[in-house]
Image (cartoon, rainbow, N blue to C red; front, top):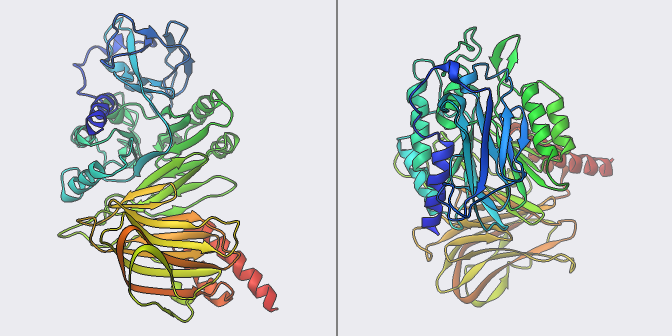
Length: 552
């Protein structure tokens, strides 16, 4: 498996991270019409061999226009004007590959790197693809690619099991200047090439050379988005995997002729074209540096095509900015001392988002303090006395606790148990129990599967679980956070369990939470507002208003 991932990594990074640019030639020879062919590369060697056939209906684009390949895999595209890439040689022609395929050769080409009369060859190898899919999203690394944090992050990603398929970085890769652009983007390129899984990127505002300046559009290969396309490929891209569709967008627009953040009309139109060619019901995942656009049509296009999830950065915070049926989240920047990132688990009909922080040493924090724990003390009632327990092939209730909202905290040590942890059980028999378990050094909750943060599978592991307001939230060892829907309109209880062996549960504590206390819930409203989580604040505000209304 690792060898296959490494091969896929080398292929994609050779493509996306823009292998060393070719010797420059006269810009007068840069083509305005590009021709080529897409083939099914049966042996995955990236070359046209006997038996390799052309692939029809594969999308080819330049970030503005989209064409599809003919029956024999051939295509012809006239390169369009792009307001945020005015310098023709910096524009890129790329392939949007379909499900069941993965690139085995270069999947894009910058016009400046094409030889006179050259026809492109894009090769795709067959690949088995099925859900669940796991991938990494992080953002705003802001340059340092050789320090301890970068090395630790790369090492952790390499050890994740199940292994993520790819990693998406949503911009602000550095601080681009005309003097430092070559060094900055070459360091990003080198980091991406050595990353343990394929890495896809989109540019942020700090990746634009000359942003907010009058000379951003100077006719050089570095100004504006030029340095990005020279080293890292297209500023817009899309592909499909197991009938899911992924789209990456730049965050650059013109304000009175000056390059700034946002989406351009040309980009929005391209997005609409790209999504319109998909089968109805295709699940779509969107990535850009920021959720903000000065053009309302951007949000109209997302609603039209029912975007399932939009992940961004820029804010340097974990924020839920969902509105009008669009789920939009921003992720805290990777340069935080805890090395935060997200794992996205996609299963049939659902997705789960796991917030993670690195297990640090030295100058880095041992805990993830970017995810501030909810102020549960405002909701806690009398603590339920739960003695430590050693269980073998059995379950044990957490006291006689049963409440609509509850909190359970324990330190779990798997001794010989194959699986152990905590179950949340509703008193409604129609609701299936939710199991949060440790197994083979993995933390498992439904479709969410994560490596734990322990030196060995038998080391203690801290679990904090909140069943509250229609969800179960799980924090583990202070650096992993995720949640699952779970009905809390009926009382629920908790139990500790061990399967096929023995496990020890220490420091067990439990509290019923005051779901009917308007004052306590008001504290949650304030907390979420301070964290910028307006949607979550509104959910608790609705509960608070309902309770206050009852009291009147």
